[in-house]
Length: 337
Image (tube, rainbow, N blue to C red; front, top):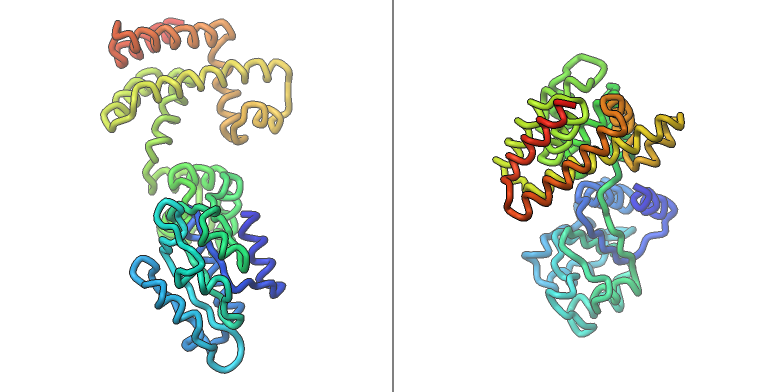
């Protein structure tokens, strides 16, 4: 989120470049940034004349340059936005100063702000990017971290006159993933679902949203950590049916038992919750679950589980045992204690 806030701060201070490249996977924030530029550069009276947008995959360079060179109507600036710009991947083309865009970048119109947006791969070392950077700015729009996503959801809830619990926000980010566009869509579905209720709760999210494949894996390893072995085996079968690879499942199960073992040791040292989460390298709510699961296994049992997983991995890789049969054997031995 820091890159986005810094961009908005520069905009409000009037530090506006003639050229911008917004790139990266977070297209929702790219559009929000474009909207803020529209609000800052254009008035209601001039917007119809001084705002122009086009699709970079359908618009020739010459046409983009022509639009950028049109003088603004009345006073102020023009804003030209080129979405889905395919021009900045080094493997796609080797643009030079003699190309229409390259030539324009060397002498951009001082009365036009030209913004390119793209989720395509970008090579900042390409000639065209370097030409843009000499006169303008490139901003990478990366996905937000989980903590920022939760804060973003809480802010959206406040704006809608609602409250979303931290547990509900964390679950929604897990199920929707880091893409703010998808997260926004799922959040607005929740607003409609809760109706007049003031608080969006975890059970609302559980009812209305569908787990991502990654969450299905976490549900399996949580079931193992909580000794719900029948549920864990059913989850493993489901994962295999939808195409998850055996090594990935095995690796996640091993990771869970390593975290349980580490959680046991930290619990014995009576570390504060925040420090436990930091040392485990997981969010606080996950750390709390791991500390609870650590109560289900002695140190000897957790070490034995890791040893059994190593043996299962070797047996499967050498073809001595089918993966599902190996996991069934592992779960049986865990259930016998």
